[in-house]
Amino acid sequence: MIRVTGRISLDESEISEDFLRASGPGGQNVNKLETAVQLRFAAMASPNLSDAVKARLATLAGRRMTKDGVLVITAQRHRTRERNREDALDRLLVLIREAATPPPPPRKATKPTLGSQKRRLESKTRRGTTKKLRSGRPGEE
Image 1 (tube, one colour):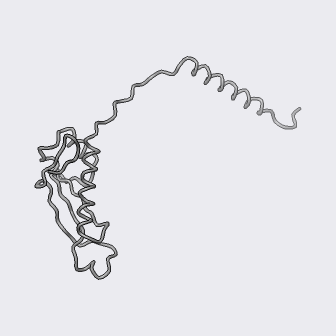
Image 2 (cartoon, rainbow, N blue to C red):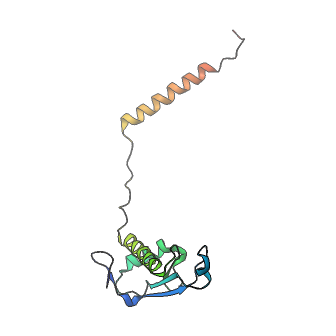
Image 3 (cartoon, rainbow, N blue to C red):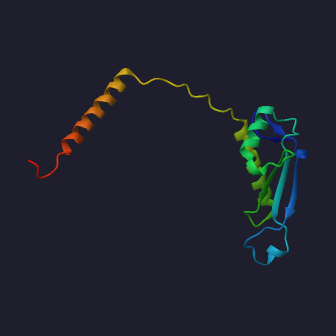
């Protein structure tokens, strides 16, 4: 079991890994070794995630979530397969933790105070007076 949060744990059988050749620099090994990792997690079929977490996870994942509800994370930052596996798993756990945090409560609209309304109107009047004094054309006096 992989511990995600205090309430969420994932079974290792829910996660599958495929290895493929990484793009980019790597010297002679880039054409021989399959160091990139493609991690697949069937999020929508997981019994360990609540419906609310699944919905937020789908929103956060965006294009990384397939139509079938499978989350696909590709890691190829590192030169070794083990480091890429760790990177992909860490990115999955961060994404699930972010989806597990509840959204902030909605903002309640408030009215401005009477004092702030008066200060705003006074400053507008002062600014308008200043601009009106500037409007005199030069040479007319």
